[in-house]
Length: 131
Image (cartoon, rainbow, N blue to C red; front, side):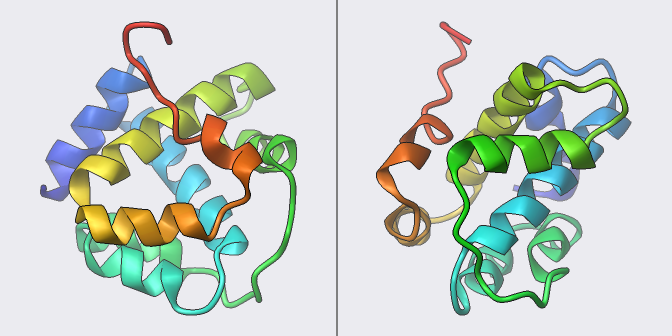
């Protein structure tokens, strides 16, 4: 999957009105995810994504932090466009992670899932029919 295809899928799944909004949502979600993942996982995940997308996972040099799913959504909201509230940030983050799941190998995605606590299963539960 290339950059344009990735952003197009995010725009569609997150129901965003522009590619710019899809870019910002992707950045907000992946930068937050990088803060939550340990060790080399952000770089391993980034290696399977288009360079323009993977760089969002490589931006942080901070050590892995433990924070709740609610805090994850709050951080995504804070990094998103002004006016994006918690419910929209959660929906957008789920859409981004669903595109990540489609873009990387199943084994790589399993590594990602293994690093997240059970409460994060909601983040990985994007369903276009019910969202």
